[in-house]
Length: 125
Image: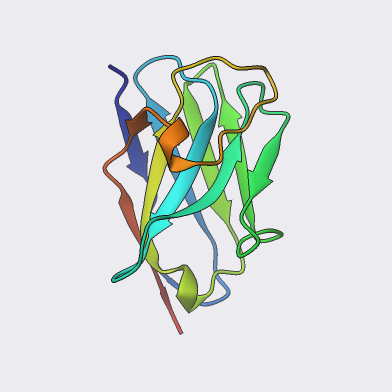
């Protein structure tokens, strides 16, 4: 069982930036970020392949958010720039335990086997 620990959430003004980190206790393959705002369903934010060469983003964050990873540290990052109040949510890290390919990015919540506890991001207007 792999544990995922997120960090880096907090309160930021609109237009600001935050960087989230997700440290895994073991090896994982495709990794992703999801978020859930109050009263809304959990939504996909973005994903990164095992090799780190491929990423995929939801339209709502494309061009503002960047996912990267350091496999030596078993850590994935979510750099969030130009934050908007509508980005306010609990952000979750997720990991796929199955190897599919070096470039595969898992995009559906059901593809992920491990989930972090979440970290709150609040963007004030």
